[in-house]
Image 1 (cartoon, helix red, strand yellow):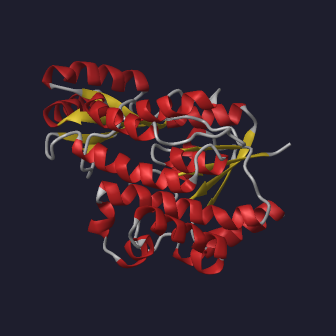
Image 2 (cartoon, helix red, strand yellow):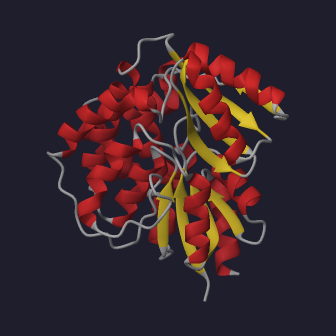
Image 3 (cartoon, one colour):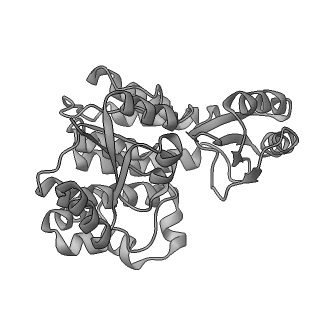
Length: 311
């Protein structure tokens, strides 16, 4: 029997106007944006629909904006009785997965991710850290590249997105050295990313420590839908693990390829990317061409997804 996985994007997927069409055709989606505004104390609709790319790119704005847009985009599916057998998300997207699972209340999640964004940005002084994408090398080659480049400072794998696409993070000199080494190893491309901090590496541990204190005030509920976690690439076994996993996620590698493979092993054959963009859809296609991939971010994609699922 066909099983559905809802998956949610991470930072970088944002754009002005995300979720606008969905919020106009779904009252439930509109209420999500109202709830976000109430929880945060500012008009998130205005930020998402009317502000500018620079404002939206500030990490403590980006994270709640993407979470709100993603949960809003999920509402028409839920209203139509389409539910997930499994759920997961890339980095920030894991919070959306917990909201959909029922393990975390939306208002709690949106407040937490705003602080998460702030702490992640503050953990490393601007200009000290960066990230780079390495295309066309194996995991082993990238790990060896990081080990060799570490003579110049901290450099670690940050995202295992899909075969042949791995992101590294760390200190600027070490990242530049890793780019040089990766190119010498035959990488198709090794390039710096336009990011404001070196996410998902050990330099972010101070952010995780601050996040841990915030999570102490949040109630975690039973997961009604199993959630796959970036930290292990496996389904979370117990609700008691959730807070620790979210803390560790900030400063450890995002095992997205492993997450997708775990969901496929569990029988997921339809993946619906919910929220801005289709980055995860591209990754999933490279991980397994045999699964069905849909997305919901606007009216056209919603209509297509509904037609396919009902067909």
